[in-house]
Amino acid sequence: MRALRRPSAILPSLLLVAAAGVLAGCHAPPPPAEEITIWQRRGAWMGRGLTQTEPFIGDTGFLRLTWEAHGAPNAGAFKITVHSDVSGRPLLVAVDRRGPGRDVTYVTEDPRAFFLVIESEDLDWSVEVAEGLSGTRTLPRP
Image (cartoon, rainbow, N blue to C red):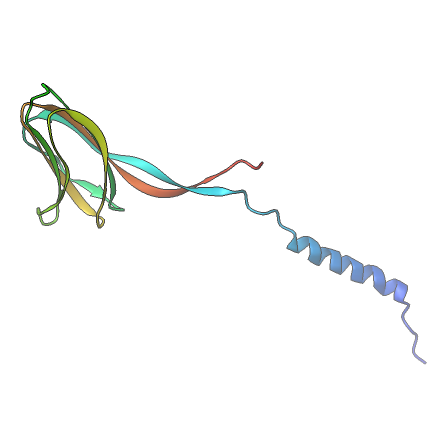
């Protein structure tokens, strides 16, 4: 004759296995996050007249040009052209205006090495280039 197992001996083991399974599936949700752009400086220049900058690398091709031109109100042209450092060809005119001013211009190009050609007539100028990199920021829990 075979001895029957008592359900009372099996039940605690089953409950323990079930509880472990439930606890393994209970993870706190990840903290909320938001997509952000991190700006890394690639170069800054200042001057007067015609200048070609040294090359800089754009790993993403997403560039921010922060520029300022100052001088007499009737001063001449101010122009910034973005060039490929690989071929030397002009890719786009980022700024083209007359007289003093300041602004931020965003450029989206294929990743590559770039340089700027900056032209000014009777204007002192400054230009800073930063590259936008994608990132995530964890937000505090409510």
